[in-house]
Length: 440
Image (cartoon, rainbow, N blue to C red; front, side):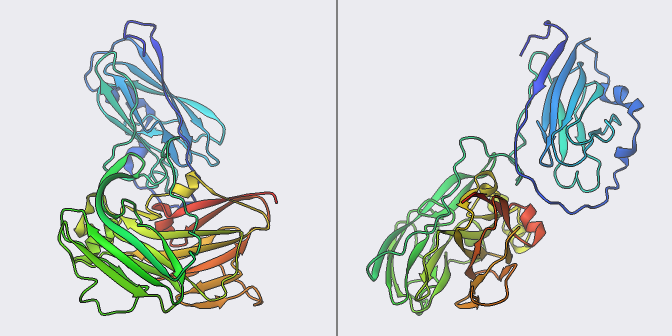
């Protein structure tokens, strides 16, 4: 960054990428949006001594976000924003001071003179619903020579934020059905500080360090022997829905440092939830202690691709009050918002794709849907609702918390097919992803 004594025109800013999201339009009644641009220089100056310098920042609107979303300007500088609309819909930029660009069409650029900046200024897109959907911008001041931009704060979850080039999505590929009839697993309770959304870290209670825990798989009649070790700091337990036995012994909470053995035989097919059995279960499940067990229906045919998606909720700070009020900060597949929108699942035209879906909740149901194709197979809670030989099709698999099943589809042509929960508020909270389909 040039020193404050350098030439008066400076350039800051950056462009981040994300994924498109369909949003429900609502009206905005903010009176600040109706201010005139004539008020901008005086309001932004806030009794600061002008430096005589101009800071120019490139701001891009893309995927219903401003990039960068935070601008830091030396106090007393005049700020000029070169606003480019790289989105597929119209946007504008309105500042609380009254400065505004007017509506900017897709692919167009407008210049906004924000005036001399002496205090924090908020900005937003004033088109219906865009501000509420997250199209906001903050201008802050800094001492001379320290201008720059920062990422959005980590006290909220932005489900559309880009997780960065180094981000690795959880492998959604279903594990192969193992040979043999007895399956043993060491399951360790671990408290892990991890990124739960772009720029947001939280200590989660986990099984074997991941959220969700590991996916288990077997056949009807197989026996599972689970050794649970509590390596955490509070008592924990486990409850496997895939088994049928009295809860008193194997589901009892164990203290830190203790171990128990949980043995069950899978008598019925389906995708089954497992979760911590310690009260309050709402807190333990919502803080990461859940996973899936896939028990194949007899005669399950092979497919080209098979995935497991576990829908769940995230609550910042593990706030039990928010959990009880059913107010999640994000709704996700496999523990991270929109991860498969940023890292799509790759298939080819003509491939048969099976998607196992478990709704781990703990509170919200799922309405699993793939945009652009139809299901010819639906298997939910232990029985087929639809088979390829039937004349009908299905658009959604509806699941209550703790229920699951699978769907199958064949993609008709190359393209990008979003998958979501069709509870749109939860899709916008992060429960969405993409199948990237290439030619066969």
